[in-house]
Amino acid sequence: MVCARGIWMTDTTIRRATAQDGAACAGIIHAWLGGLDWMTQTPSHSDLVVALSEGLPMREAYVIGDPVQGYLSMEANISHIWGLYTSTQGQGLGKALMDRAKQGRNFVQLNTHVPNTRAHAFYEREGFVKVGDPWRGNDDVDEIRMEWRA
Image 1 (cartoon, rainbow, N blue to C red):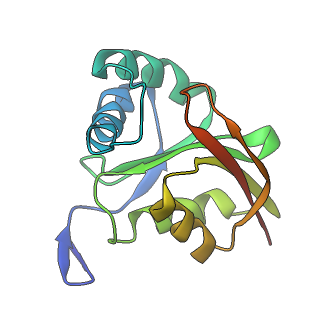
Image 2 (cartoon, rainbow, N blue to C red):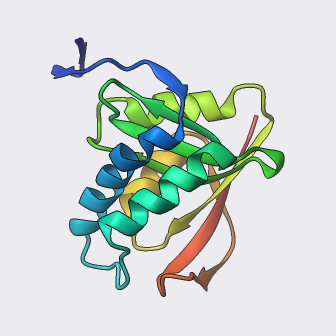
C-alpha cells in the first residue's frame, strides 16, 4: 500500500489495459454516473462491460492499481483521450494516468461535459485550455474540447 495525501491506497502501478479489465473499468464509470444529477442518459453496467471489454484493446489504454482503481483510454493517432475515470478523487490516480498519456507527446486533446466543472479544474491544473464553443454531445449533454501542448 502507498500513502498519498494521508490516504492509504492500493498499488498504483500503471499498465496497458486488456479486455479483461473491461468489467473493473465499467464498475468505475457506472459508480461515477450514479452520482451525477446532470447526466440524462446512462448506459447499463452490462453495456459498459461489453463496450469496454471490446474497446480497450483497440485503443492505447492504461489502468492503474491492483485491483484497478482507474483507467485512461485514448486514440493514439490523434492524441485524443476518450475516457479518464478513477474510483477515488484527490489521490493522484488521474494525474498519474494523465502523465502517462502525455509521455512522448507534444499535444493531447479531450472532450469534457460542460457541467463537469471538477474535471475542468483538474484538466486546467494539468495545463489544458478550453478551445472552441460547446456542442451538444451524443448523450444530450453539452461538451467542450480542451487541449494540452508541451
